[in-house]
Image 1 (cartoon, one colour):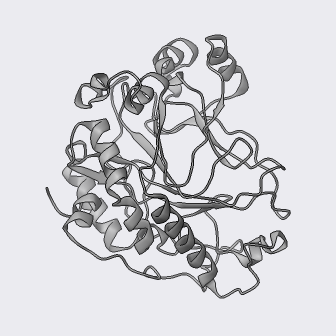
Image 2 (spheres, rainbow, N blue to C red):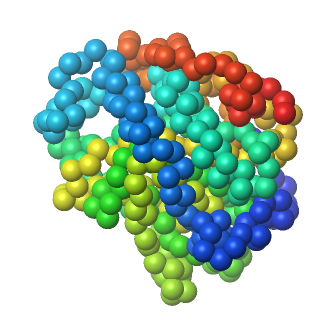
Length: 333
């Protein structure tokens, strides 16, 4: 990743079409609130098929004890290794056929084309999240408010996405955002932080005192609710975190993280790295056009050894065509 040498970078907002969105359009919600829900980006039937494929993938590691109808079986010994609680990024999962099929859904790609004002896009090789409610073998995780953009960047540089394959109600696991926080980030970083502590890493964590500053401006947390087939998008400057299910939830959350950016935002070096990651069936961060590191996402056991169930290729490889290769950043537009 290139280290930035100046405090701020040029805003990318003139390159997108959000300012032209009519009142009431979800693009206007994204611009004003920092997040939006695109209803029915994927047909319901397709979303449920992808959910089933995700479950089949989860059961493909040879442990027949895992039963989606029996909460007692929702424990670590019956699951592949997770990169974080509930998130799977190893085993080549980023390049499973169902993951690419979901990423290439016309309604998903078109939504990001509307955001950026171009259909020449590249996509992140991001993770699968399957959250079992009220697991007994892991501690509950509290809020972990953050943004996925460095204070050194100004303006909208990345829009993240969740392809929703399950119901996300008020009690279910899902995304919590601080609506409008993206509009206050510059003022916060300039007036409430020491610039010498800023990092070029596109991640910034907030403590409770810092969140209080936003709340004084009327910015309050909001649980995003969505249906299977909906697409949730948010500006990476918007404060957010993934909420655990409450004790009332019975929903197994199933989502695919996917972010898209104009290919023109990626440097030739980044595209070369992206092609190498693609060849290795590796993963990336939420950023499609930056922060790409060539590495193999090994599945590591707690003792530091590689999981013998790990795979050098996806269980079901995607159908490689021009559309996929262009979205992967491997082939030019």
